[in-house]
Length: 102
Image 1 (tube, one colour):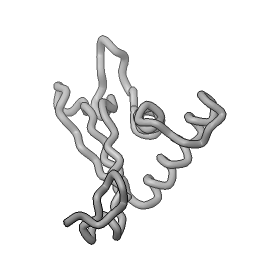
Image 2: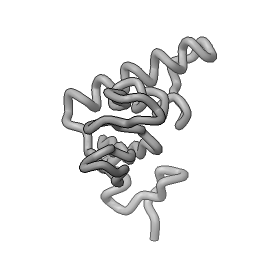
Image 3: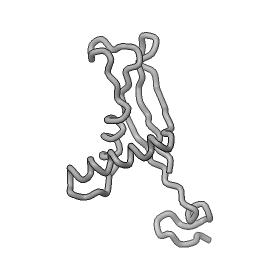
Image 4: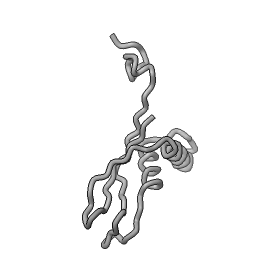
């Protein structure tokens, strides 16, 4: 499983696009955080994309400055992509049904 964070980062006096692929320990933290967000919202531990985005914000958002005066290193998470790879999909299975594609 891969999790990629897309954000804006304040560097050198301006906001720049920032992309970060999570390390294995960060992936575990993100999964735990998203499950906790899902459970607090619906009594289910099945996270939705909203839960992953909120988990990303919880783990990676940083505010060293204020909204009107950002500081070096501030991060605002915009999107979180969760990429699940499985051997079935890599072997040519249909992603929706799990059946072999022709």
